[in-house]
Image (cartoon, rainbow, N blue to C red):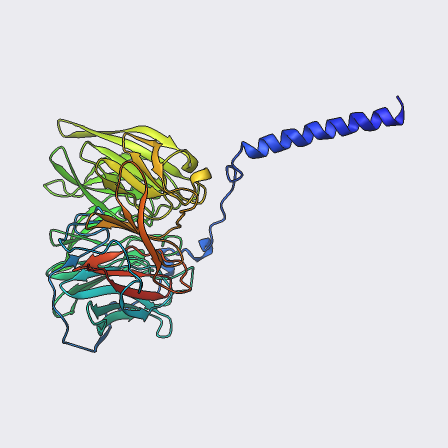
Amino acid sequence: MDTKKTINITLIALAVIAAGFIIWWLNNDPTDDFSVSLAGADNRGEGDSIQTVNIGEIFRQYETEYTKLDGKWPRFRGADFDNISESSENLIDKFGPEGPKIIWSVKLGEGHSGAAIYDGLAYVLDYDEEERADMLRCYSLVEGKEMWVRGYSVNVKRNHGMSRTIPAITEDYILTMGPMCHVMCLGREDVNLLWGLDVAKEYESEIPLWYTGQCPLIDDGNAIIATGGNALMVAIDCATGEKLWETPNPNDWKMSHSSVMPYTFSGRKMYVYSAVGGMVGVAADGVDAGKVLWETSDWNHSVVAPSPVCMEDGKIFMTAGYGAGSMLLQLSENNGEYAVEVLTEYAPREGLASEQQTPVLWNDHLFGILPKDGGTLRNQMVCVKPDDPQEIVWSSGKETRFGLGPYFMADGKFFILNDDGTLFIAKPSTESYIQLDKATVIQDGHDAWAPFAIANGYLIMRDAETLVCIDLNA
């Protein structure tokens, strides 16, 4: 065979190989086989290595006078745990030529902890890097004055932020959970320490990656904490600190970043929790309070931040990041016995999924923002029907992408925050994405991931270092 013919055959072969590679590249997800390296994994700790902490030891009163209001956003995802405000305030749908009306802002330690609001006061858990202390800070909602701080000294290494939980507030109590799993319960009016709990030390729990993300729950005067370790979940009387029940943890499921969600199904109230190891429903009341009513290990991922979305018909939607995708479960009940069935499970590029925020259920549709491994629709807001979360009803479009920031509904509008502190206003729709306006709220913002809080038309949001209050009243 002559040299020229050999060269031609070689060139043809190389062209075929190159064409095959291009076809493979275009039709395959390059993240499909990633083995995720989780930053901060070396900072996990177990109970026997945790410091001795005097919870609640620090208190400073700065102000006493403030504008009293009656609005409330008392905990993670609001009063009804659905991230929808039911208040009657008339809010703006456009920012106007002067832009967002920022009424105050403050610098905080690096973190992603959102606020709770109660009757004119805003509460946020902050890590003070200079003082090396977890600090619950209380601000007047209208004036932005710091009213007081209550906290405790604890060593926390910077690990892509420190504090990332939201306090729970009731008429009588304030409950916080710090990055190293320290729970603090205070009287709401006098701010006196009622009790504290070092979860990691007492229950030999493993502190989650990037520290505690679970927002504590107060239900019927009791603190509900998913501990992991020697117990899966516990209930504590807020008034006395007495442990009312502890749920056994024979499978050694670990604490996740997900928060406990109350749920009533078929007349039975329960607490639904997505642990590292599986998902569980725990009896919330009655003689068997604390008993596991149902559980499944089908949903088991190492990093879980969103919380379960529980629906009236027994469907439970769960999602997570880092390739986990989503799962739709069906809960059923027969004579007091519960069973759970997996309806569908899929990768993040195959339907609604979320890395950090919990999707919103509205008008029989689910809304969420796809993660960065969500395929061609990555970082877009999408709408799906709960019966078929893989069928995208609409997406916000390739020109309108977001990140890991929060979104919620108030006054019949969606408010959406992207990573750099730009706030979007959209009209909720089950037919298309309808954007009304957008504006930069935090200049040079970054990692604006903390959940929103709103009351009396005042929206509190933040990025990694700056807490901002905006007047959204029309």
